[in-house]
Structures are given as C-alpha cells and as structure tokens.
Image (tube, rainbow, N blue to C red):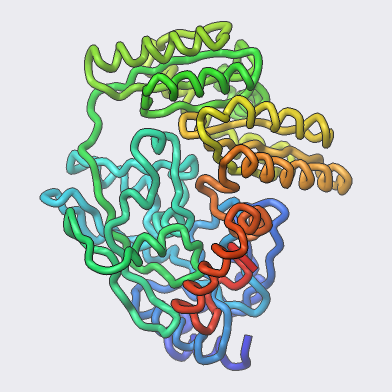
Length: 459
C-alpha cells in the first residue's frame, strides 16, 4: 500500500471507521475457503454510508491501492481474501433495511443486511425473498450479490440475479452510480446491474440493493424422503424427476457420512437408513401439492430407493432440511474442509456423482456429498486430516479432476460459490481464451486502475 493511505483514510473518515492495527485487521484477511491463499490488509474500512465508501475508493484510486470488499466472510472460494497491502472494505455496519415497498413488492437494503433478516422483515408484510443459501443465517445480501448465491429453493425460484432489480455502486473513479431499475419492467441500455451481480467485487463496490419480493408461501410444503444405497441411484432419481417435468420447491441430497456428522454434533437422531438421503418438496397448494409429492415418491422408488415416504410430520421434515443446512459446519469440526461447487445438467447428475466417487477412490481421499440436486449443483466436501500434507495434495488433485469432469459433462465449475481464487484455472478452461479477453475488456472499462479485488476470477 502506498505510504500515507491509512492516514488519509483516517483523516477522511475518522478513526472510528478505519482499523489500522495489524492484528485486528488480520481477522478480515480471508473468507471460509480452505487452502485459498491470502495476504495481510494494511487497513480495514468499516463504512456506515455510501459517502464513506466513495471517499475510501477515491483515496485508494489515487494511491493505486487494491480494494477488497467483504461481507460476512462466509464465502467458500477465496473471493474476499485480502492481498498484501490492500484496503479491505467491510460492510458489516451498512446493515439497514431501508424500505419494503408492499405496492411494488420490493425491498431496498444496504449490503450488510443478513439474508435471513431480510426474509423475516419481508414476511411481516406477507412477502418473501426466495434466495436461501445454506449460510442464510449469517451471509449478507451484498455477499450474495457478489457471488450470485443460490440455495435450497433456487431449483424452482431462481438465484440472486433473478431478484436484483437495481443497485447503487461505487465504481473505479470513486463515483456513485445507480444501475438497473425499481420498476417492474425496464430495458433501457445494457444490463449493467446484472453484470455486477456475480462479479465478486472485481467491478465495483455495491452499496445498496433493490430486490423483488414474492408473496409469502403460507401453506405447508409436502416433503418426500428417500433413502438410497448409492449415489448413482440417488442421481438417477434426480434425473427422473427432472425428465418428468416436475419442478420441486427443493430437491436436496445428503450422504450418510454428512448426516452422521450432523448427528454427532447436534444429536438430532437423523442417521440415514441408506447411504444417501434425498429430500424433495412440493409447495403447490392442496391436492396439487399432494399429487406432485406422490409423483416424486414414485420416481424415487422407481430409481431404486430402499425406502421412500411422504412425510406427515412437519417437525421431522423441517429437522431433515435443517440437517442439510448444518452439514458443512458439522464436517468443519472434523478437520480442514475443502468445498466443491460444480453444476451439471440434471440428466448428467448420475454420471457426475459416479465420477466423484471414482475421484475419491483414485486419490484415496474422503469425500462427503451434499447437493442442491434438483438443479444439478453438487457440493463434494473433501475432509483431510490436519497436518497431513500428502492427504492435502491428493484432495487438491481430486478437486481439480472433478472440476474438469464437470466441464466435460457440459457443466460449469461453480454454481453459486463463485470463482474467487480456487476456480481460476477451471474458469479459464470453461470460458476459453476469447471469452476471457471479453471479461478483461469489461474489467478494464469499469476498473481502469485495476484496484478492485485484483487476482480474483481470472489472472
């Protein structure tokens, strides 16, 4: 960082908004991506208003100092990791829900608002914000926008980009711009708002977000539970549901290893009766929902489920979905955990799951499996003993093979976690040289000084 930037930040924003203590700043140096490298920030800015962000960007631009945006730090790709000498802008204090417009069914929030807090506030007015990443109790809307986060119900209701109508952002010049719209329709100009969604902080700093809301779902969902003896059988069930044209409100996969980890941590008594558990849901009202649930159950059974049932116990069904959300933190307790995030066409889910099993055997590494199976988004979890460098190397090799396998099956290297640092090689392989050039052109146009999150997404 150029000399004097920290002092300039303190002078412009006040010491209460700038952390210069190296030990405290180190706590903002990385997200939750295991093994993603990170540097040491020279300062951390914690703004309360857009004006604070704009002033910080102008100071950093003048000094050619890198700027790394940070939400709650729950990311799993290294996108929020600091580079040496950078300024981290943490949005933890910009956490206000500015308004909920019931007439237009929209909400406008600051980027530090926690996902679940927005959902709870919208529910007070009979509205619903659908994107629900497993980290929704902790992750923020700004972070969700940065990675275009999805979640359990995105199979039917879409991902973050489908709900972002407008953004306020600070761009490379330090100017504040508004992108998108707040109206139900609008096609003026390029979709620069959509461009920023999923850009992982490389094009600007988002300071306000307007999202569309849906009517709150009031009827209980119909849940189907299926136990399978193999990943490929469970994958076949997923493919069969998709081929039948059924769009469940959720279709989640969790293997026995992950479920046992949750049981051992939370003592929930949910250990699977088979090797793999599929959880399907229908939120259609009345008899239509019951009929869709029956159809899902029939496809589970036809694909080889040893046991499949429509749950009549709402509490038990909710506990199973809670276990799915808890799988990642439960496995974290067992040791260093590397998380994959590939997505393949739903018809290729059985083959992709088989390739994951083969990678585990080939590289002698333990891989647990959870998935938003209904849209082909798979999350293999690599569990590695601490202080075992050879095991770490094998897991990293398996990680890269799975990335290549997803591309080979017509998929993508990341469905919702983002590219960050961990998927740069895979992203280059997926996109190809010409498209990477297009990305660089956009980056250079919006961030001509190259200060926003350098080294992420592509090198």
